[in-house]
Image 1 (cartoon, rainbow, N blue to C red):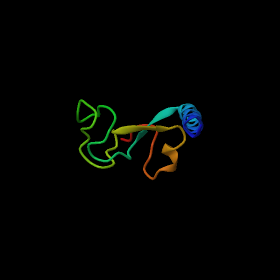
Image 2: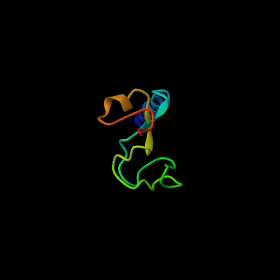
Image 3: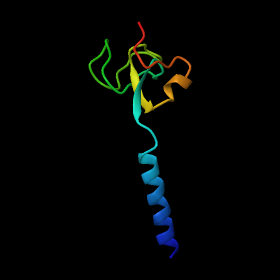
Length: 77
């Protein structure tokens, strides 16, 4: 019985997490080598050259990017 309750709780938690928020691109807050896609200076994910690179982004839950210092929904110039 305990396993069934635990399984049900985990299932409900996973369903609620999948519907929490949509993702959006957040520029300027990525650590070097941790970007999600290509930048102006490289052609694939995981190859940003420096921390906070202005054209490198990661996907974050909607609304979180604007709460981060240096976070931007558009690439910086």
